[in-house]
Image (cartoon, rainbow, N blue to C red; front, side, top):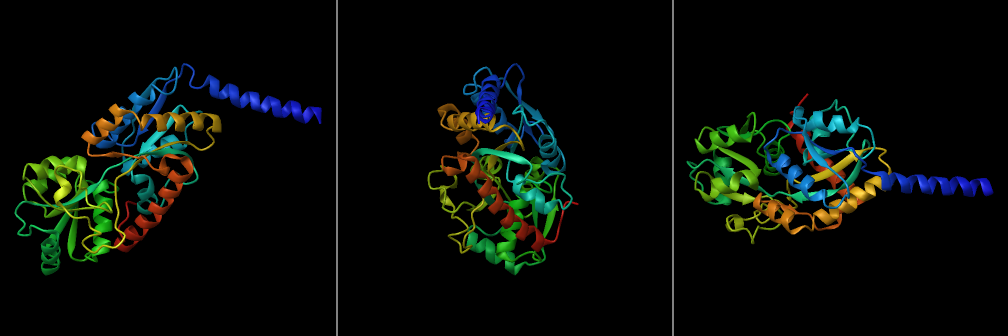
Length: 328
């Protein structure tokens, strides 16, 4: 009996000392599975800056590991040492890649510790300035009247605009009505939309708001459950739910992850630091400048974060399977 008590005490001390030792002198790397300069990279750099305040003695750095729709960076973290020094910041692609890549090198729900959600970025349904429609209902009617003649752009397989376009087309039942045109990033896709070379796109407010405000593209609807009534530019546009798409609610959310097997004491430290960071006024302000909303609901807890991603995976897989177009 004494031996068992001694072992239990030793285990408790080991876990406690592990937490106290973390992070030590080694930097904590937040891996971004996309190139530097994009919205996810910006979120990661702002998050790294604020989390330094809440993990004593820490040095958070951002590492870009781009390619294959985010799967290269995610694989890197899944296979990293589970010591809390390699984290992943991934957007909705965490839920989309299992549907798009049938030979994925990791399992999103099994190979990571979930640390909490960071933010939500609304999406907007936008069109080229030459389109005759000015309201969503007119736009919908125009698409149906011109089935087979129109196209929809996106920034590449697995991109936010690709996922949004897929889900919208599935709900609209317009899979055969529009030709999908992939680009090598948001910038060329937006340039083509402004120039009238493509008809429409569904993309993040971080990429569309300035173009809408400048009159360079037309906006028709937002993808959130409710209209963005507090947004200075997008408050004028309805939600897709209002327009009859029951249950349609899509944001390009970001979440934080660690490799599976990271000690509970370390994941707790990181989750607590994340929750404090999400209440930081400067971090909130920076997110608002990007058009993002910092998460302030139960999804900041690891269990709820994981439940949310699992539900998103089901929703996205149905849309991808209906389209029948995969990345591999």
